[in-house]
Image (cartoon, rainbow, N blue to C red; front, top):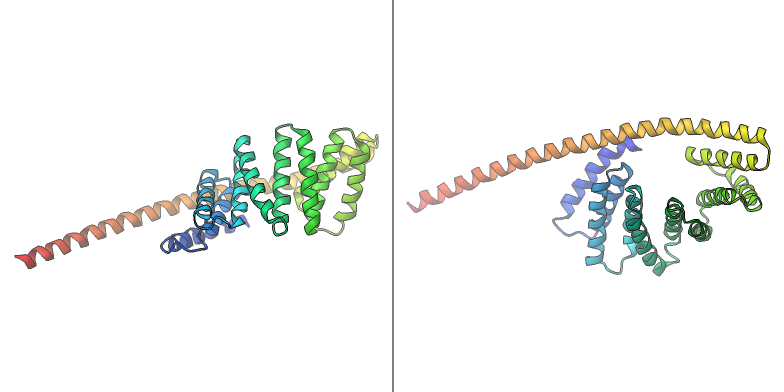
Amino acid sequence: VKGDYPEALKNYLASANYLEQYEHVQLPGLYGNIGMLYSRINYNEKAIEYLFKSIDLYHKKYPDDVSRVKPLNVLGIVYKNEGDYEKSELFYRKALKLALTEEGKLSMDIGDIYNNLATLSALKNEKDKQIKYLRSSLLYYMKVGSKINILHTKLTMAKYYSSENDKEQSNRLMREVDRLKDSLELTKEMKHQYYLTKSELEKASGNYKNAYDNLLLAYGWKDTLNRDEKLDEVSNLEMKYSYQQQLKVDSLKQVEKEKRLKIEFKEQQAKKEAELS
């Protein structure tokens, strides 16, 4: 819940501040969590800072630990959101290369990375790469039996084939999606995408009444999403304001601490001089 983010961030930062004194084993993971939290509220500059701290510390202290796959992958997402597709792909590939060294253990992560590469390829209009990565993503999601990710990937593939005018493939995939969706709780975004894709396929087949009905359902979910996005935007601004206020408080505390230390130092110096005289 985004309303919980200010408190979560405050706790994470306090924990990091404490653990930094001892170079604790949990520190790189904690930095990664802080970076991920910042990325979710689109505070990308801070996200990048903490994700790099996580990756660098993993590399320095625990070079054989594959846990840095997650911060590498999130860095790819952050740079994609920033529009830096070159850096995004670089970090996705770093994450993928590392994840493949523990393929059995990290199948879900590998599926996510391939899915992210597919999204990036679509943005770059590299359609051959997009479908290749989607197929790879689906393979790994099927290995771990992640039904919600299987459904999402098949839906994306159905949209891809529809855009390529391959009705046979798109209809086959939508039938598979229909069989899956009734057993799952879909997100609002997935419901919007589902009905939008159904509308596109019905339109391509000349079934305009069904296309119209599905389009209305898609727009209905889109309206709900737009309201949620506006609430998220407000929550993001509240989060950033809360963070800035916390920085001011911390800065004032630091100033007061430094003043107190200077006074204590002067008092100690005066005491020593008095003893010497």
